[in-house]
Image (cartoon, rainbow, N blue to C red; front, side, top):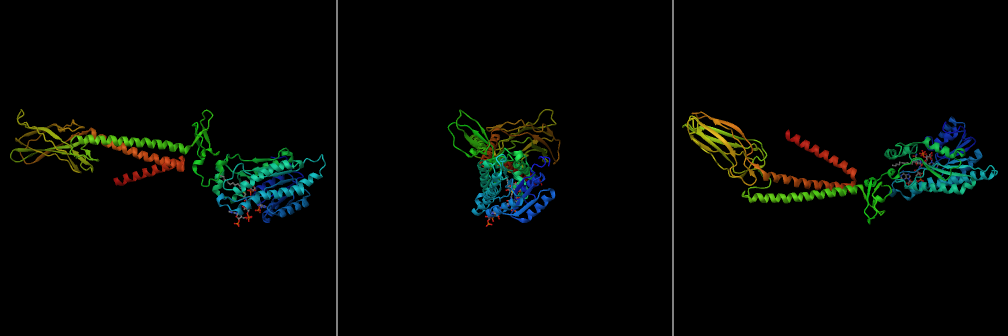
Amino acid sequence: MVLFKNQLYSGKVVLITGCAWGSIGAAVALQVCQLGAAGLAICGRREEPLKDAALRLENQSKTPVFYQSCDIRDPDAVESFVAAVVAKFGRIDVLFNNAGGQFPVMAENLNSKGFNAVIRNNLLGTWNMTSSVARLAFIPQFEKLTEAEKKGANEDDPTQSVPCCFPGMVHTGSARAGVDNMTKTLAVEWAKYQIKVNAVAPGTIVSTGTQRYPKEMLDKSRRVAPLQRLGTCEEVANICTFLGSDEAAGFITGQTFYMEARVWQETSLNFNRPSYKTEACVCVCVCGLNGPTECDRSDNPRLFFRSGGKQHHKMCMPKLFAAIFFALAGICVAGAIIGCVVLKKEIDSISRYDLNGTLAIGDYILDANSTTSNLTVTLRNNGNNNNIVNARYDSPRNSDLRKFIYVDMCFSGRVFDRDNSSIKIFTTVTKPYNGTIIQKITQQYVDNYVVNTTNPCVQIATCYSATTYFGFQESNTTAPSSFTVATNTTESTSIKGNIKNVCNVGILYTYPGIAIIAFACVAGAIIFLSFALACVLIGFIRMVMLGLLAVLLIGAAIAFAVLYHKI
Ligand SMILES: CCCCCCCCC/C=C/C(=O)SCCNC(=O)CCNC(=O)[C@H](O)C(C)(C)COP(=O)(O)OP(=O)(O)OC[C@H]1O[C@@H](n2cnc3c(N)ncnc32)[C@H](O)[C@@H]1OP(=O)(O)O
Ligand SMILES: NC(=O)C1=CN([C@@H]2O[C@H](COP(=O)(O)OP(=O)(O)OC[C@H]3O[C@@H](n4cnc5c(N)ncnc54)[C@H](OP(=O)(O)O)[C@@H]3O)[C@@H](O)[C@H]2O)C=CC1
């Protein structure tokens, strides 16, 4: 043992309660034995583990070990055990009240019997042993000392009291708080006997005891521990051995040593604890408002914005986020309202322009967004040297399920005799197409022009919307620039050409645009409202996680829909 001076416990008789191999008690026992203790007494309720531990200790040291089955909750059994130890070794120098324990349970599920069992085990049991050892050994030993020799014996209490709370184990928390006070009180009361009383609160230690605890509980304990690990029995033994040594810690008394500076609000067992309790808190100062909130809990980290030394209004992070999301939702609602108002105005203005009520929500203007459409011009000889000109306009949207509105449209063109060097026949073709709503059709504009020539030439010079309603711009469309046929047969010849948008619809661009904006605002409002609600209900972090999950799911659904559609 390099940590402590060789033979630090030389001549000392040590009593350790609870000493099954693998426990903290056994680790302390091994150290003191290897440091030359003159005698070791151990007890526990079950004899087998004691016997096993005694054998191992004697194998690894020269210290004689005395063991006896004893329940520390039973004062008579304790009294008789202590008496037996004194009889065996003649004295007791150091007592380690190590025996104890409990079971994890939520307070609301803990009955009086269970509470009593744990209080008895940890508080009453500790008292029983401490009192017996003091009365049967420490004090009589002290009394026998000469004045010069009265420098006392130690009592060290490795009980694990917890600093502020023990969620999930109220019974043992209460008991250990009692032990903590017992430590301080006895340290003062029994100082006159030179008895030093200290306690050790080790945090969570890997031992035969914690092996019985749920793995998740230990994992959580590990996560919240500042050092991100559990302690070992040897590490607890180190401080116990130190405190138990008059030589090493002779001036220390009435102290409880918390081995692990854990932050207790984070170490709570988190049974059904609302997530916002652990969220960071932002405290926004509003003078005059000082209503306490859950942020007042000491376990909520806070950011203070002080002003004039006045009280603060504290707002938890989730509430802050909820407020932000509510505000954004409000903006969206306002946007949606404005959008709807503008939309209504647009619709009103459209109807003013005499579309005869043919315009309805969801209608689109012909080719408003298309870049091309087809114009087919066909010359057909009717066998009588008369050529019939057919012009046909096909919307590229003819498979579109949306409604089209065809507003007045016409072709302008001329048909003439190409044999003649000058233009012999000059015909201007103008044919308005009255606006109607046609669903899912191929728009056709067909007209026949009879040209009395054997060798006609057709030129479609321009194509434009003849009548412009409000918002309809005249298009700069160009039909096939020239088109000639020389035919005296009954065959037809045709040419196709691109015509750019016939209708360039200003107002109806706005219409779906505004509709989309209004819809987006409503959707945004719904999203932000849900976020705000989620912030309050489940906290910001979880809300973000859920949001991401939702986005992923929606993305997957869209991808699936697109794929499905394509297939
Ligand atoms: C993030 C931070 C992470 C934190 C992570 C965790 C940190 C851990 C820190 C601490 C770790 C340790 O202490 S490790 C050490 C663990 N070692 C031990 O606990 C060993 C000693 N403990 C025990 O023997 C028992 O737990 C104890 C109850 C105290 C005594 O048991 P007994 O059977 O002798 O008790 P009895 O007197 O008969 O009374 C039994 C009654 O107790 C109640 N009872 C007993 N066991 C019960 C159980 N499992 N669940 C419910 N109730 C129970 C019932 O009411 C029983 O009554 P009936 O219904 O009528 O039977
Ligand atoms: N391990 C940890 O993380 C922590 C432990 N502690 C405390 O430290 C001490 C040792 O812990 P640990 O080694 O992990 O626990 P273990 O359960 O491994 O060992 C406890 C020992 O105490 C004995 N014991 C329990 N109750 C009694 C009783 N009524 N009378 C006599 N002996 C008893 C047990 O023997 P038997 O069952 O045969 O009686 C056993 O040998 C315990 O008091 C524990 O509560 C505190 C904080 C954390």
